[in-house]
Every structure is written in C-alpha cells, then in structure tokens.
Image 1 (tube, rainbow, N blue to C red):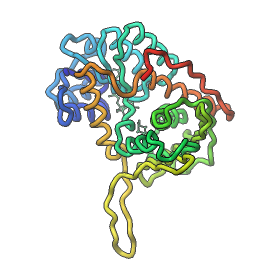
Image 2 (cartoon, helix red, strand yellow):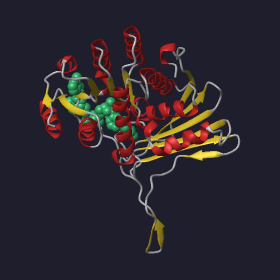
Image 3 (tube, helix red, strand yellow):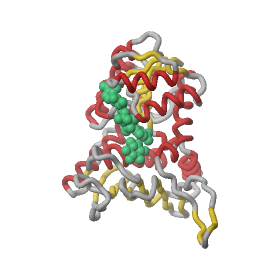
Image 4 (cartoon, rainbow, N blue to C red):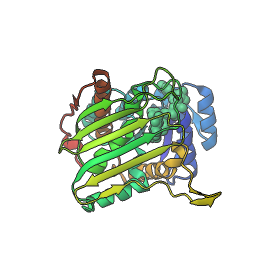
Length: 333
Ligand SMILES: NC(=O)C1=CN([C@@H]2O[C@H](COP(=O)(O)OP(=O)(O)OC[C@H]3O[C@@H](n4cnc5c(N)ncnc54)[C@H](O)[C@@H]3O)[C@@H](O)[C@H]2O)C=CC1
Ligand SMILES: O=C1[C@@H](O)[C@H](O)[C@@H](O)[C@H](O)[C@H]1O
C-alpha cells in the first residue's frame, strides 16, 4: 500500500518510522505538513516526496491510503476529503474534538457506501487489554459491575487545557471500555479534588470521570496528567464472580540496597510501542484484504460524544446524559 501522511509532528514521525521500518506491506510515499521543515524531516526517513498541502496529498494518484496525524481540530476536514476521494484513512485519536464534526464524517462515509475510516485507538491492540477482553468474553469474572481506571501522565505542556483530560486523554479509556464492556455509556459526571501544585495554574488537574453504562455498570477514571513519577495506566474490572486487572508492562524486579523494586514506564511511546506497531500492521493488512477492521468512524464519534458530555459535566458540576443516537446498521459488527 502506498501511504501518504498528513501532519509530521511527534506521532506523525513515529508512524513514518513504523511504516517504513516495522510494518510490512506498506510504504510511505508522500508527506505533508503546514511546517515544511517537519514534512521534509519525516519524508527523508522513508525516502518519500513532500507535498505542499493536505488537499494535494489526498488527491495525489500515487497515494492509495492516508494517515492523518495532524492536530485534532483539523482532522475532520482532512478525513472528509479522504472520504470524498474514496481513499482509506487512518486518523489518530480523537477523530474529532466536536461530536457534530464526527456526525458529518458518519454521514459522508455512509453516503459513500464503504467503510474507509479507522481511528487510532491503539489500546485495543495492546496485549494486556486483549488479554482482559478474552477473560471478559469468556465470562471469567461474570457480569461486570464496576471499573476503576487511572490514566496518569508525568506532565503535559502549557498548551494542555482543562478540557483536554476528557477530549485528548480519557478518550482512550472511553473507547477501550466501550470495547471491553461491549456497550455504550449513558451518563457522566466529573468531580475534582484539589489540584496538584505541580501544574500550570490554568489547568484543573487531576479530574475524575464517573460514568454509568447503559446496563448500569459504574466506572471511575482518574485523569492525572502531572503525576510526575511516570506514565501509569491502570484498569481493573470487578465482576460478579471475580476481578480482572490490566497487567503492568513486564519489568525486571531488582533487589538491591535493602529494597525490591521495578521501574515505572516514563512515557506513552514506550508503554504502547508494541500496540502502535500492531495497530498499523493490522490496518495495512485490512486494506490489503479489503475487509475493514479496527475502531471505526462510529467508535471515534461515540467516544467524542462521551468526552464532550464530560466537558459539559465538569463545567456544570452535574450528571450529564450521553446523547448518543443508535448505532447505524452500516457500523454494526
Ligand atoms: N494514540 C496516541 O496515544 C497518541 C495520539 N496522538 C494524537 O496525534 C495527533 C497529533 O499529535 P502530536 O503528534 O503529538 O502533535 P504535534 O503538534 O507534534 O504534531 C501535529 C502536526 O500536525 C501539523 N499540522 C497541523 N495542522 C495541519 C494541517 N492543516 N495540515 C498539515 N499538517 C498540519 C503540525 O504542523 C504538526 O507538525 C493528535 O490528534 C493527538 O491526539 C498524539 C500522541 C499519542
Ligand atoms: O494520546 C495521548 C496524548 O495525546 C495525550 O495527551 C496523553 O494524555 C495520553 O496519555 C496519550 O496516550
């Protein structure tokens, strides 16, 4: 597959390296970024061409499929342009920052009549989450009743504002829990403890999302993006007959100087390196087989609806209903 990539920033460059070096069956042939230096640097990794605009890259007859790794607010227009051109597109999360833009994508894809969009929710490709799903699907802990999650980043840049814990960060838990539990969320509330002193003053951090699924399971997600000590992702599902917990990444246990310890992963590129590789490999495989797989535009839309409701919940302090329409038949699995 000849791939064009739009948005050669941090993750764009990582995905170019991945597609050029570790993923089989694909090559990056074109790169575009509003910053020409970034585009040139990423293109050089793969021996690809630089194309001056996203529109030209999408229209380029030498590009068979597109990876969108630009800033989230421009995802919608770029994904819509790919659909209009009939080209498969892998779009990094979040698919859109506003649910209304996600609806436009659903409408366009259904009007086109073929599944073209996959969303970069890489946790579905993480070995630990896949093991949890196998346990749940086999009924290993009975009916899920409660879920406890923590999403901790060591720090975030000053541009990270108080809606981002939902739209940019907890959107991962929202998606992976929809997938693990096999149902949608019905309500969300956000409660905030006192903020850490280790943050930029404009940011509310940490924040806790309290969600309820359609069938009545309760979920708490702690988002704490200045925890300082590492990149720490926790998830425990409590069912009627047992519990299942996301495994920590394997690390050697060191006994020394009177202590037994193991290191905490420091960043998401390390924590989810294998998941990112598997995600892009399975996307390329699905393009080559012609059978769509992975998180769809519906999944991207549903996650943003919940994230938007959580933003409203923090602002109002109340319990907000998740206003999600029924899943169209086009997106039934
Ligand atoms: N799945 C995951 O765990 C992760 C996903 N992401 C997602 O990837 C996306 C990009 O994030 P980063 O790489 O961290 O950001 P970044 O700021 O490093 O890179 C974004 C790039 O997009 C370019 N860009 C912006 N508007 C553009 C346009 N109209 N046309 C072409 N290029 C444009 C910028 O110049 C920049 O080079 C975000 O949606 C983010 O949420 C980022 C990190 C991890
Ligand atoms: O997607 C990601 C970032 O964009 C986001 O900013 C971080 O909070 C997440 O931990 C990371 O996985």
